[in-house]
Image (cartoon, rainbow, N blue to C red):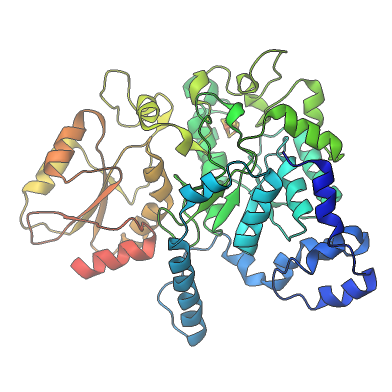
Length: 476
Ligand code: SF4
């Protein structure tokens, strides 16, 4: 953990320019330049404009936040943007994040945050849960660089947390970019299963609707995000969190696995040191902490813990203590743990909802294929229509990661004569899928042309709508 003196040293080096001089500089800011923006830290009247040029400089980026990837370029401007993206991808390919994580293993959270913000500029945002991860915002402020903060408003947070959000916005003079769940999805869940279904059949379904999908939409507008995960938070799932990693579950704006980088600047910091830091820096904290809450999430799923209890014991206390992830960091769960969540204990997988692993790709535009259905599809040499089928397992984070794009694709193809299907290929069906359907890992996507006996396996890890459409159009 960085000492307070080291931190104040980093601020004072930026404070030599007068407020008036800064005013003219700020007015001319067009890029995220650390040499200009930090000087506003000691100039309260300018602080708001120091934090928000993100919105002022590139307003289009805000719109991109939830927008799908663009189709082929139609103008020179779009071609230039695409070329920049290609160059960026090539640069990114050179970064070995495993190696970077080992290089930064002993770095302070402030150094790690500074590196993250420097590297990703406006394409990175801090995920703020409304708990002690406010430390991340403080570290970001101390770097002197502009930064973005987003939060998921599940609709089920404590009133204290909402008040805390407001206090944080005012303290830092920032606007938190709130993401909300899809109203239709929440309505369907609550109307069919009630307001507290998570107590009966596990928290994953509700978390998926209220947290994971909004998060996925947010992350599609970024190239990197910053989390407050710490190794000491959950012995079962967070014991090996690196300070930086390729996100194992979610996609960024460039699409595909590997397109999003996840920074965990406090992964090596213990909870007590976070609290020392918050107290030293006089940072606002959620008033629930003074009532015994440590880890804070939604109101129905969080409770205070007693002295000596682990903080995660206050979350989803009615469930297995080793798997307390809401899906936001599901990549932390080892494969075998995830498989346990997705099967019914004797190796066979149920079709729709098993032990907290609700089914995915649920839309009328996608046909749910049974084993005989798949066998028929394999047997036919002249099909009435071509088929695209995903072999999946609902517990697989990569399958969950492509859910939105696959559903969107199916809806786009619904009037084209191309059928889109899904086949759950874990459990008892796995040997069949491996032998007959080229299943290597989940998800595997197959195209069954109209006049061919063998399906063609999609060879890429890019699972965005445009890439999948290009694959289909090349073969139909
Ligand atoms: Fe739903 Fe509880 Fe998850 Fe919040 S934490 S989204 S209320 S299951």
